[in-house]
Image (cartoon, rainbow, N blue to C red; front, top):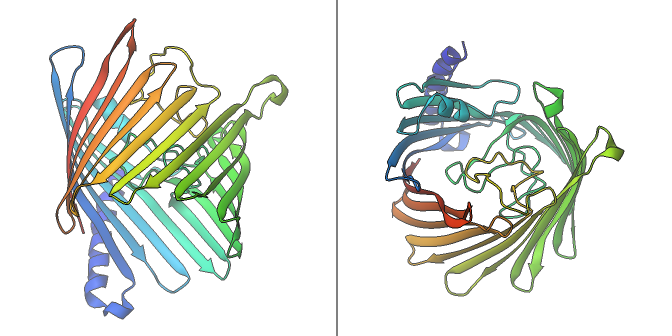
Length: 386
């Protein structure tokens, strides 16, 4: 049934939105459409033998917005993904059919013959703005994170830094109410629904600008944990200075359990030359300090445990060679495991709305007393935006 619904809904939205844009004068236009088409080629040479695996992803996205008046916005965003290659399997098909909290708004076909097609509505919301209030209901992204890389405050829809191809990041079936007390102060309540009570997330947040810093404090329930968190963003001289923390404590048997503190701090600096640096530290009180067999590429992170290790260090530098060409090098190091993640990226603007990216992700770790490369991926991506 849901496959049939999606097959009808997607073409219908396209035809309605395109008709609306063509038929309305610019000043009266109420429907807007943006999106892109991407092709991502992945090459995975096995570090354990001479095998080389190939995967390809053709990814299309449509972002629709409808403004019936000055107070109301209706949003609909659809992603269509067609995977084919050596690593596509039934289990792979199940892994991409995710991000469904209460309403199952996705459908997949294939998976048996090294291909799978997945279509998902990952944004579908109604937003009402009136005076100092904003109310948003539906599938949306609730971004409470401040820090650039690791976000212990992002309790509603955590994302992985390694998943660079999902720029929009995951959303949630939720209700979000914001009240702006003044220009420098606001309150917010958000409630993420779920099919199971144990997966509910609900919290309050207070934001305040003071001493030229943005501060935030939050408290609530994050699945099986009582949660309190906070963060700040400002500058020390010319360097950006950000940080946030979250404390998670199981609300059952409060006196007999130990909580988890997750905290990240980062500094950012831009030189006069086109060089930009970011350094960040993550602390996870429940993380490993000794060797572990956890694979960072498949690790299912959460705001409570953004890394499987107690300490993680991040450093990235980017350089703009020309107006059209730039590059960056990012690294993550976890001392306990001696894990080193290396991520060089090269980006070129081929023409207006057409970009080319070449990316490598590689991990090194101690395996049975020998320090070696445990995984390496090469990506080539071309993206056409419209």
